[in-house]
Length: 110
Length: 114
Image (cartoon, each protein chain N blue to C red):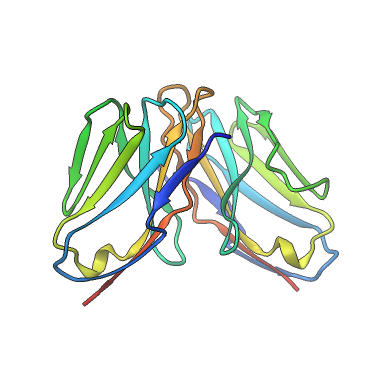
């Protein structure tokens, strides 16, 4: 079964701390996506990682991709309250469609 | 570009009634997706279209659900008859297609079936 596993599924942390969300996928893929969803809102694309070793950064968020390990990480540096959201990863399968993880709900306390 | 447009934004109906959700994808996108999101089951892909043709409807829960895409700028998701367990947020998303798979999501329709 094709699947994506995110962990943790829930994370509560203090402002100023660093943390990493992990996304494992079950088969080979060369493209990995990260999305953000604010409470009660829609999903918004954050990053597209296109190749092994790809790293992208936007503000306090940095995403990386290791296709050999079938692992992507989303690292949060010096978290701020505004980053509280649910973060989804998704990978592209052989039919060029996205397979979604369950999401990581991140709460950052002031 | 206005992005993906969905209507209605909120729908409250009684069990047994027909519900029709509408979606206008981003102009020029040739793939369209319908998702359902609930607390219990997370984000589920219901069906997707490529060039107006349904490609995979394996996620459609049962015969009460149907989806159409009569042209490149419009799609509907219909539930008939609706049941309380259909209560969820329904998202429509579109993408530009092969090698441009980033999906752009609409604001969603919050459906409550009483």
